[in-house]
Length: 175
Ligand code: AR6
Figure: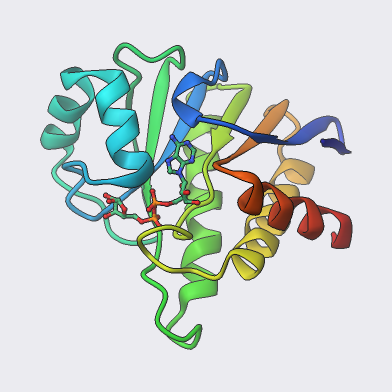
């Protein structure tokens, strides 16, 4: 499923982010940037030790910010590592921090001159963000960015499993 946003395309697919051929993929990391489970574990496993070595050099990343490394052995040339908020009750700046992850990741893509980026559903696994709420924030934030930055031609949301895909598809229809 895809929609046109200004001159760009926003796309939803169900699948594995490590297999995407976009110029960059985004990692849902933690503040250490030293790896973990979920999508983070999958990216480091598929991308090999070069990514972790670069992350070590960077030395961490605060919640809501993003850092970029090369893609190691991945099809994508770059990995943008961002740190989503741990969801508590929605009253601890979680929406604002989640939106910031998407925006800061896209700013790095713009700075590198990249035209295509794939995102996972940040914070909705180990960090417990309710999927329906996270989907609306993700799609709205990316849409707003693309309208101001037509240089990014394609943003793909790679949803892991049917439930995540369905939540994003429903949110996209609401947009
Ligand atoms: N491709 C796309 N999406 C995936 C993949 C994959 N290969 N694997 C899992 N997902 P999570 P978070 C989905 O837990 O909530 C890590 O340990 C998953 O189903 O990966 O931001 C980090 O080191 C879910 O919808 O990230 C942090 O400590 C989404 O990706 C912490 O987890 C995000 O789930 C970050 O937690």
